[in-house]
Structure formats: structure tokens, C-alpha cells
Length: 456
Image (cartoon, rainbow, N blue to C red; front, side, top):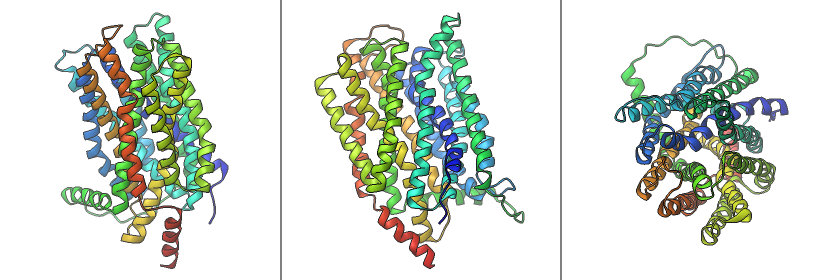
């Protein structure tokens, strides 16, 4: 079995930079922008994030189905990646552009824009993740391929989490208003995301080969829609997939709550300025990058499932200790960043290749090749997590009396800001760890599946 070369891994990884740039920017700053710049209440802002999740639940099955059916002379995956990179970048720009609208209209306006963003993101992400399965079927090689993706993911995280506050502060120093500075920052990140996707589209030319021309068939819209959701339902009911969905959703709700809450925690509870916040987020990104080779070695010596569970348990124990002791001083801040990193980065380094394993399980047990449909579930849970995590955080902030117009928050608001970045999200991480424990596919089972395929 021929393994992927270093150049191929790097070429594939570039789009992960765009993925992390787009997803991280929305995940970390959407609620903060809506509540402090656009002037929307936290509860309504959380609902806007939830609207995007509902919309994505509709769009994901469609994108997965299309990505499995597309056959062009440019390949199966790359045309979709290229086309949808445009609404992805446009959606990023528009979501972070403040428009002077009546209070009753503004939430609807931003809800529509969030839907545009998730349409672009899902349209790119589903074929991109499926493209990784086309690169190689080797268990360890797929893991390493996704670790390269994680490396570029860290670069994207730097752009989307660390740079925005620094860029906004710089532009404000040049005389721009906060609204204009956020809009220009989002435009820049959107362009960067689109360019990195284009690089992978070009680099993957020899992996996403031209497809044979197929005879044109009459399309019945109603029948196709039924087929889309029937196949999605069939995949969702696969026993291992049910555990994988729960594990992914709960892992990413943890990610969304911690990362969205960080900006509030650092700003209001710890009183950090924009530069200090950027430094903290940069430290998280560097630490996440340093974990990649460590995670890779552990995975290759043990297994993906056990590695995830181990890091989750370690992260949960640390977060509980931090909640008990409190976040104070330099040591407390460093400890929080360390354990928050464990809870929010290892998922991205391992889980995509776990979804690839499900593709082989599906081929052996059902005889069907539904790679894009299966990996689209990761895109679905990513959007749902932003919606669920954002809605929960929004409700908590609203209930606790948070106000984006106040520089100093009440003691109750700051208490629940801290809870939302520590004990509440790790409750979801505990559920994820249990679901992973019940997930039945490990390296041994995977190799057995591959042998069955070869025999057949």
C-alpha cells in the first residue's frame, strides 16, 4: 500500500489553515461581536448562533450527498471546495460587519448571514474531509495525514483567535471605528481562508482524479431529496456512528464554550487588554502545536480512541482543580491556558481520521461507498456545537446580567463567566469520553475490516 509523500501531506494540510481560520473566528468572536459591537443581547446572540446550527443540520446531508455524487473532469471533491470557498469568505466578512438596522430586524439580518456562512463552510469542508480519505486507506498514514492537517490548523487558529484583537486594536489606532476595524479584519481573514483552500485544490490534482463521463440521467427533485435524507438516516443509525456523533458533538460544545468564553473571561474577570488577550491565545496555539508530535507518538503506540479519552480525563481533572483553586495571578492564568488547551485541541488532531475509519466500516457492513456523507457528520456536529454552545453561553450571560455596554460587570456575571469556561463545558467533555469508550472501532478492528474488503 503506497503511503502519502511529505509534499502531498503539506498540500492537503493547507486547506486546514482556511478551515481553522473560518471556524475559529466564528467560534471565538461571534457572540462577542454581536453583544459588544452589534449591540444584540446575549440571549438573542445565542439564538442567532443556534439558527446557524439548525440551518446546517439541513445543509449537511445535502452537501454530503452531492459530494458523493459529483463526477467532473476536474475530479469529485475539488470543484465543490473551490466554489464554496467564495460564500465562506463572503459570509465571514458580512457576519462581522455592523449594519445600522432596527432592533427587531437586526437579529433576522445576522441570522441570514450566519446561514450564508455555514452554507459556504459546509460546502467546502465536507468534500475536503472526504478528500483525505481518498489520499490513503492505511490506518496510521491517515492519522499522520490528519496530524499534518492539525499543524496547519494551528496556524489557522493563530490567525483566527490571536490576530483579530491585535488587528482591530491596530486599525482603531489608525483612526478607524471599532465597527470598521472588525469588518476589515473579517475581510482579511476571509480572503486568507479562500486562498489556502485554492492551494489545496491545486495541490490535490493527482489525488482527486478526473471522473469518467456519465450518461445524463433525468433528475427527480422529490426523489433526490428523499434519497439524501434516507442515506443520512441510514448512516446515522450505524451503531459506531451513534457513539461518534455524541462524542464529537459534546467535544465541540466544550470547545465552543471554552473558546467563546475566553474573551469574556480575559476581558472582564482578569482585566486583560487586547495585547495580553492575544498573547494568551497565542500561548494556547503554540501549546496546541507542541502537542501534535506528542499526540502522534501516543496514537501510533496505542490507539486513537484511548488517546482521546486519556487527554480528556487529564483536561477535566485540571479544570476541576482550577475551578476549586480559582484563576488568579500568572501561575493561575498559565494553568488555565494549559488545561483549556488539552480540552480544546486534541479533538482536531485525532477525530477526523476516526471518521475515516467509519467509511471502511460502512463499506464492509453495507457494501456502500458513502465517504462524503459520513464525514459530513463532522461538519454537522461542528455547526451544531457552535449553535448549542453559543446558545447555552448566551442564556447564561443573559441570566447573570451581563451587559456589553458596561466596562465592569457584576459579581454574579463574572462568577458565571468563570463557570462557563471551566466546570460547565467539562460536563460535556465527560459525556464525550463515555461515548468514545463505547465506540467499538480501534486499530485492530479497522485492520480486520480492511482484510475483509480485500478478501471480497
